[in-house]
Image (tube, rainbow, N blue to C red; front, top):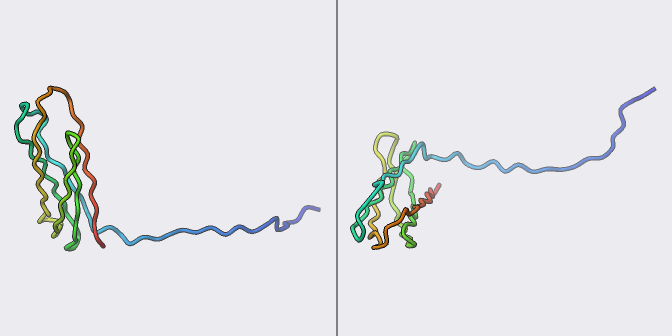
Length: 102
């Protein structure tokens, strides 16, 4: 007659991280710009409580990092970055990395 037999035991781990206070965020940038002109990239961050934020924007082979605060779900933290478009016409990809200190 078949019965249950212990074959072995394994231990596993699960890290429970604190819930992020960031509720949402957006990136605003123009879809086109004239060669050699300034480009402004704006990062808006909303949070459930005041939270220190840091954003790094990479565009045209350059990176800029700024810090600030996200204030609430109705008042965003706003970080603004300015780059100069290259003289070579092409399509360029930008990237934003957002971090929060909590």
